Image (cartoon, rainbow, N blue to C red; front, side, top):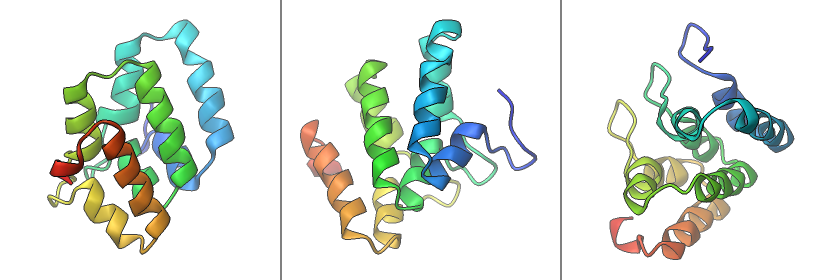
Length: 128
């Protein structure tokens, strides 16, 4: 996977910038050429040097549209309940900050409500 000197991939940059249309193009292209494990890794596992995954960038930057797109990708990739819980809701950056922490830091009720709604969808409310 290509990344810059800070460990950021194109997926990180597109999520942080809120470029849903580019994420959709990236998403559509590799499915023909790349396997499911690669897509899971670049979207939900790979971290930059600060410990931020693509999912964390979407939350941290307040990109609700990206969060929703990535949730759809997670469902299409058929992430297991444990993968969803551990990589989307319980994952922490290098400082120990979780998704709910970064959602709160945005100051956006829409980001918090979106994260809460997604957790309710999978009955993870008790972990947030």
